[in-house]
Each structure stands twice: as C-alpha cells, then as structure tokens.
Length: 243
Image (tube, rainbow, N blue to C red; front, side, top):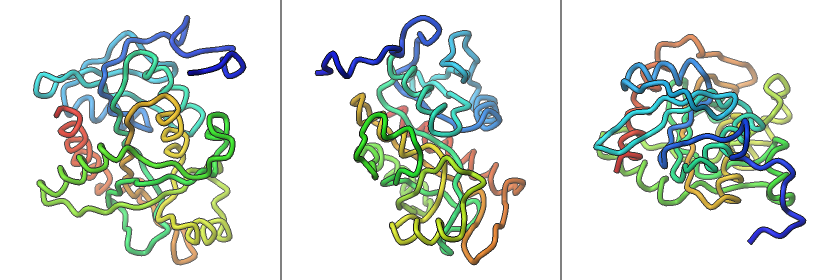
C-alpha cells in the first residue's frame, strides 16, 4: 500500500490526464506506426486520448483492444502508460524500434525483450536503485508461443533504454554489450518499471531499424523490411492480446 510520503502531487487519471482505456493495449512508439496499424486492422480513432497520444480501438475475437501512439522516449511513453493504466489497461504489448549492437541482429529482425537496462532518467523515479527490469513472463511466453506457431524466428534478449539518441558513442555501445545488451532503444526500461510499480503485465517487442555494430551506423529507417516486420509483429501482438 502506498504511504502518504509516496503520494504524488499529480496523479494519472484526473483532469486532463483522465482517459478510458481498454484492458488490452498495443502501445506504439511512433505516431506513423500507430496510424499504419490502425488502418491495417480497421481500428477507429477515439475522442478520448492519453495526452499526448491517440487511441484507435478495435475488436479481435470479441476482445476490445486499443492501439495507442505515439509514445516515444521514456518520459513521454511513461506518461502515456500511466494514463492508460489509470484508465483500465492491464495487459500491454509495446511495439517499437531498436538499433542492433549484435552482428546476429539485422534490419527488419524482431526481438522479444526479456530484460531492459536503464540508461534513462525515468526509471529512477519509480525504483531509485533499479538498473534492470524484467518483462512479464506470461506475455513473453505467450508471444514466443505465437511466433513459434507462425514459424517465425524467435529472438529474445536484453536491450538498453537510453535518452541520448545522438549520444550513442562507441564507448557506450561497447559498455552496453558488456552488460549483455543486444540492442538499444528509448522506452522499455521505464515502461517495465512503471508496469512493475503499478502491477500490470507488459512486454516489449522491438524491430531492428538500424545497425550500430562494426564501428559505423547503418540506417534502415527507409527499408521496406520495416513495414513488413511492423505488420507481422502487429498481427502477432494482437493475436496474443485477443486470447
């Protein structure tokens, strides 16, 4: 039980931050990916919104699911997640992009994120001494099973979440690799921490958008592989959420 000293001055679920959400959420890091998947799966935009994101609502197997985005970067993604949880969200899959620091991971590959290492500033506001945070074991197992049934290559591992998109230096990349990370992204350690703090299930799925191993940056942000991977990953995530 939260004590009075831990009570925040601004709580989610009041005033501007009040939203009605479905119990099951597909959270997208960028606005364009949210719009692409909303169009692909015939989800309808709702007037209610977790500031500053949008909600697109659909049904799969008679189960109501919200597609929500954008939620990019730990502070904003955390703010959106808090509002969704206060509005009723309990099972969340996050679908975003990551840069590979492992030669075995190529542009377009999909990674199930088992554990996220914090190199961002949001996590410490929930757990000051926590450096790594685990995904929901139940969602991880369910998503791996779904991928196996579809014949998808199952790649699972740890990522680092960082605030410094333009400060991913060679020294940092080597340090992250020593910590056991295979990719870098911007949100998941904070989202895992918030999910743990609030007692909900959350799993991150990361599509490899660029490569940072080998001493140089190889961008795949314009690669058709990303759209194809996004559609496949979105379909698998919705299948898991609808069961």
